[in-house]
Image 1 (cartoon, rainbow, N blue to C red):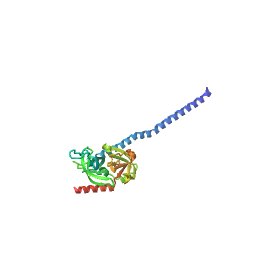
Image 2 (cartoon, one colour):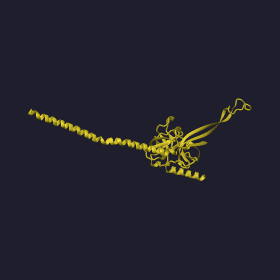
Image 3 (tube, rainbow, N blue to C red):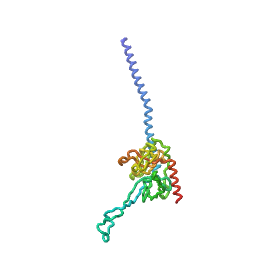
Length: 287
């Protein structure tokens, strides 16, 4: 018996060492898990904060965004069977003759209020050739509008409505300060769905884009992946502060497939703001 005592002590010591090692490992694991757990708990807070920023921008800018509808009468001289204007008592039969055919063409776009007394900025192509223009405000009030000024080369136009009270005007920012990768938020009426908000980033700046089959070249455009579709033209592209940095203008859509994440906006900068202010001043002087 006496010679077996050292073996028992050695085994006890080994067991104690193993248990101590396991306890130390568990303690170290518990301490190391503390920081990631805190980070995981903080992540939802950051997500909620970002979501709140988007919500604030939508609430701030959407009241200034309008839906624009235009109507144009296109008259064509055609030769054919004019049965609708045929008078059997005096006209020869069959009534083949030249006559005027009238068809109505409607267009849909967006815009945004730049002055509380009713001046609205949009794309020139939205109102080009229109015989009648109507604007639907965020409160669903529809008002007739008239063209104040249009620059076809820059594809910008200012139209005017006569509101009963002051309108909510959007704040113009500076596209020169925008960086690639910054948040971009597009607001407008794609396919007539008013006050639609889409979110993306500034994908590139200074884009040169050929449009209308190459007949027109637009320069220095902002590229974004915020969804822009038919009806968004003329609506604002804003930054995370709710400032307008661009006017949504076009999309790249091979085969007319719709939005594929490549949209373009005309930058709003100091030069643009100065031109807008000058047009509005001139219009007010003429009243």
